[in-house]
Length: 235
Image (cartoon, rainbow, N blue to C red; front, top):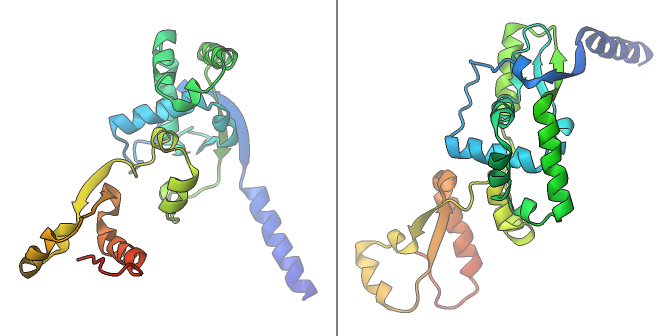
């Protein structure tokens, strides 16, 4: 047991010693975008990201960009870097216009709004970004990091989001759940059952585009929700 513990301790120290992780404030123009990053972003999503960063700059310090210690190529934070490069070029009025589209900004006091504008005015003069510089990664590990940094293993709890979060804020933060594809429950009816549609009221269920593959599961949830009501059917 004692020897085993010593071995584990040695392994931990070896990896900590040999994985050089160094935090540094770098000019955004000195960071190199990763041309091999397989993740894309649409213009509208990039615009939302720009607005999101503008209204919440503290997040940049909390979640630094991850880049190669020698080449400064980004492994994690490619989209954030792109957004910051855009912000660097914005005029003051353009920043104001983008911020005014954010619900959070509208809820700030005049003093807080002015403070935020002064922050970005100062940042543009010296556009520093907090970066975690890493070394000793093999080419395979670099590629693995890029993929794993962008993979989302979790699943949104949409009921929780709908009940506890502001819809406008979530949409402005990049959530897709309100860009809906309308799916008519009637589409589940067979030709033989069409005559039943004339009886009673009907419900239209809106399903987000990204949940199209889970349509059957959503239907099961709807069925379970109305199961206790006599005469209510989901076809």
